[in-house]
Image 1 (cartoon, one colour):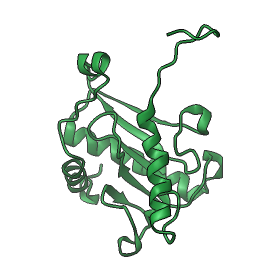
Image 2 (image 1 turned 120 degrees about the vertical axis):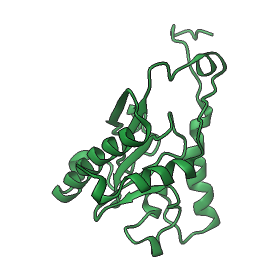
Image 3 (image 1 turned 180 degrees about the vertical axis):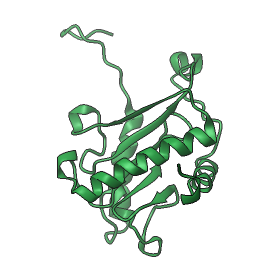
Length: 179
């Protein structure tokens, strides 16, 4: 349906899960940070919601996306709650770059994708649903990964459970396996 301004709208209500989950969980436990990314800390013993963490660094980490576009879709982000790339310090910038390179190597080793989308959505107007905490997406792509099911039925088929994907990537992402 076209509105009076001549634009068609594609409604994506499933994206509200990001917002709703963060606020619902904060209400249930006031001791947890409101930002789901801030619940993950460098120390697994003090971390919350880190079951999908693939790799921890000193200033940054890699975690699977809870709502992936494709199998292996992960994010690389700093532990520190910063919104903009220019707010990162030099150590965070370097480690995010290194973890991104390692993610590409690891995903290629495990899944042999044909290509990748790698990028940041800075600010809510750019499409970032959790714009307050910078996160870089690493999305493996295969020729034909947008098939009829997604195009016609609005349904994405993911052939592997997140926990299984996390285990495969974490095992392959060992320091000895990096170039």
